[in-house]
Image (tube, rainbow over all chains, first blue to last red; front, side, top):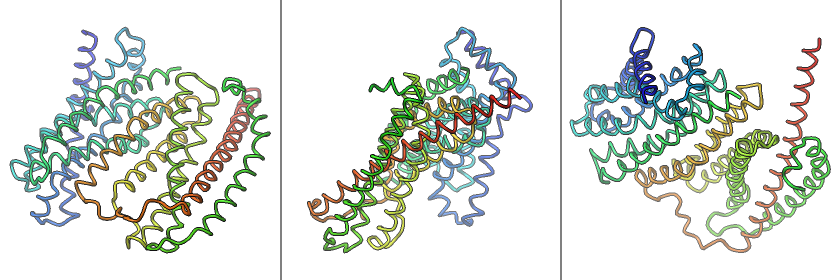
Length: 222
Length: 241
C-alpha cells in the first residue's frame, strides 16, 4: 500500500514539475476549442448546438496527447524495470500510475471544460452536463490509453502508433459521453440511460486496462 | 494429426505443401459454381441486377468477422498455449482480414449508390465495419513497427484480445448512437425473406470465400515461416562474419 502511495505521489510530482507536461493537455484542449470556430465560423447558435461534441472531442484528443509519457519516461530512466521487479502487483502499480496520470492530466481537462464551454456559448446546464460526463468518462480514456502506452513501451517505438490503436477502442466512451451531455440539454432521451452506460464503460475499462497493460509489460520483458 | 504436432514448422510446411493445391482447386471449383449460380440467379424485382453485389458483399462481411475470430483464437494460442505458429497465423490473417473488410465496404458502397443514392451513410452497420477496418489497420501497423516477430506477436495478441472484447461493445454503442441520430430510414429493405434462388448462390459463394481465405492464409503462413527462416539465416551469417 505504501509502495502504491509512493508511486502515486512520485508520478504526480514528476508530472507537475518542470518538463512534466501536466498542463500540456489543457493547452492542447484550449487550442482545439479555439480552432473550431475558425473552421466552422463564429455562429454562436451552431457552436452552442455542437459545443458538447467539440468539448468531448477536444478532451479525447488532449488525453491522447499526453499518453505517450505515461510509461515511456519510466522505461527510459529504468524505473519501470524496478516497478516490474518490485513486490507490488503490477496490475495495481499500473493502475496507480494511471490514477496519477488522470489526476494530473485528466482532471485538469474536466476542470477547464466549463471555461471552454463558456467560449462555445453553452448554457449552464450543458456546461454542467459536459463537465460531469467528462469527469466520469476521462478515467475510461486514461485506462484505455494505459493499454496503448504499455504497447508503445513493449514495442519500444510505438509512440506514433498509440493514437491509432487507442482511438477505435475509445469510440464507445465518446458516443455515450456526447450522448449523455446532449441528452441533458436537448433530450429527447433521458440523461440517465447513456450516463449509466458511460459509468459502466468506465468501470469496465478500469478493470480491463490495468490487466491488459500489465500483461503487455510482462510479455515485453521476456 | 493434433494441433500440437504442427508446432514443428517443418511438419507444418510439409502439410501445407500437400493440401495447398487441393485447397486451391476446391476454391476455384467453388468460385466457378458460385459465380455461375450468381449469374443465373434471378434479378430482384425491386433492385434489379444490383442485388448480385450481395454475392460479393455478404461473404466479405462474413469473412471480416471470421478472420477476426481466427486472429483471436490464434492470439489465445500465442498467450496461453505458446503455440509457435500461433503468432504466424495471427500475423498472416490480419492483412487478409483487412482486405476482405475493405472489399465488403467497397461492395456495399457500390451497392448503396444505386439503392440509396449515396455511396456512404453513417448507418450503424457500415460504421461498425469501418471501425473494424480501422482496427485491422492498427494491428497491421503494430506488426510492421517491430522487426522482432515474437515480441510484436505478444503485443499484437493482447491488442487483438482487447479488440475482441471491445468489438461487441463498439457494435452496441454504434447501434445505439445510430438509432439516436437517425431512425431506420435506409435499411428498410422490406422485401420478402430471402428466396431460395438467391440463398443457394449466396451459400456457395460464402463457402468459396471461406476456402479462398483458408488457401490464402496457409500460403501466407508458409511465406511468413520461410521469411523468418531467411531472417534467422541472415542474422546468423551477420554474426558469423
